[in-house]
Length: 209
Image (cartoon, rainbow, N blue to C red):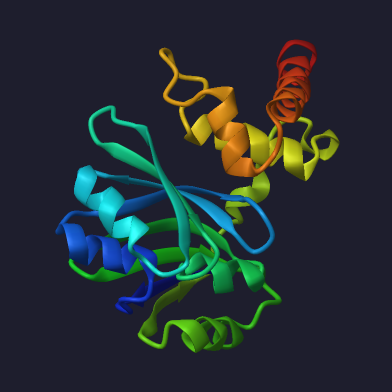
């Protein structure tokens, strides 16, 4: 089941950023960080104004610019103040999220046995200005997992996505291994270990099937 939600609460990070900068913001990815915190990768045409606005938002503990290729990507660490927090608590998969002019629109995927009303009520506990716009039956987008995903630990996958979102695999690199490791609150050798094992699993699947 996929539902479309719309939120206008200024307490919601994307809503606040779109109002503060007057530009559109897109959620590119989410990676769990420390207990209760998320790393959100947000793209926008705003630069310095976006960094300042994010740093001033309640619940945000750190902001870092990780890429500026035709725009700006921010890595934002937040323990609250994001619509993603209650949604993920409900087991939702955020398919798409954009915000402009103080309004955030999300496409959210829920399992068929999840009560949509219960999810909406949970989100409204933190963000009362959230409305259900549409509901439809769709094929799960998670139907094609990463190759050999069953042998990849959650932490390996999280490290791989964080490194990818932070531009670690770009050339030249937008983030160093030390910066990615710091964002995940792990040591640099631990990050390298996670990445090497994840890459080995992906390459083994690619070359050996």
